[in-house]
Length: 418
Ligand code: ADP
Ligand code: MG
Image 1 (tube, rainbow, N blue to C red):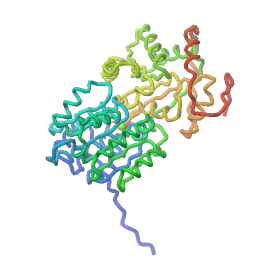
Image 2: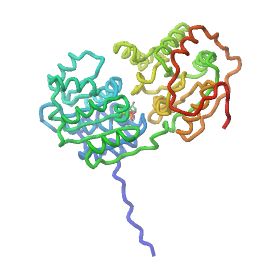
Image 3: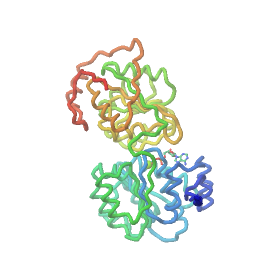
Image 4: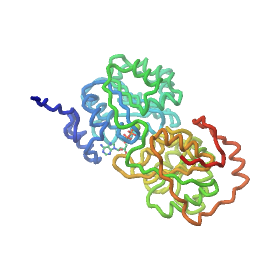
């Protein structure tokens, strides 16, 4: 005889209304149309609200931001303590800006103040906000470390520390600044760490700075969301621009187009503009106001196309990007996943298309191996024009020999079928 075990009900929530949080925040969430938590939110929110340390691994676009914003706001709303109560470290200013925007929506009317401490924007304003008693600081490690060293930010009252995209911060060389900062934050605190991968440096950090964390792991950490359709066109360099124009004519919706270099981004931007396309451009060589303008223009629907490089595109969260196009192949599988993750976010369908030149066959196969699947090859449309290859293009090729993360020998001009 078998005795049926009572079924264990998992401690996860189905709607935000079930959460033990302030009613004002519940209203803000529902006003912003956040009704059903994403899987990572559903799993992380309860332990996070209970004050536990969290280690979250999830791909981009899974809703990690709210998973840490809600517990921060709830905690600070119930506290009368002075000083900086929560610190969020993020790899780029774009990402920090997205976080503060989401904080403003979710924390509307709570009276809790937040400020950025990021490079590239006027530091006077940031210093001033800290001095006036901002409760939450969203910072990139470089700028905040500088503030701390100059005695401009006192972290001794921080109760909650968040490391957002910890792996990326480490990749960008921020480890020393992260350590300096974390050593200034009280031991007695809640720490939440989010990362797409848990390779050695991050695992080390986790071991050192988190206390008995609740592990929340959503989906495979090396695959773009299921809602993204992946496609490849195999083509010559001279056909890329015509095919892009063809796709713009054929498919509806917005396009986020990735190039390898700033130079390539500017060049493509100009060509598209000449053809009358509403286009913006975003790369590390642009000033911060220019970057903001390009991103806002794309968000507001003024630009249908945004041409961007990898670094600048990090953390772009624009609702409803229909197409991601790898006009130039990404350098590594990880970049491929991050780029593709810009579309198909939270229950939206998206398409990520990659232009692959014959000499890049090995590289795309390497990416497919990491993804664990073969990406569909589409036939080129008939009558595609090949652009003349200008001298300028050749010079550009010579300058930008690409670093490749696949050590396999490259077979130029030789296509190998698998
Ligand atoms: P991640 O940090 O995991 O890449 P984000 O937190 O930036 O993802 O969320 C991605 C997008 O999904 C954002 O535009 C966000 O507003 C939206 N989003 C997050 N949570 C929800 C939810 N519960 N319901 C609907 N949309 C959500
Ligand atoms: Mg995020």
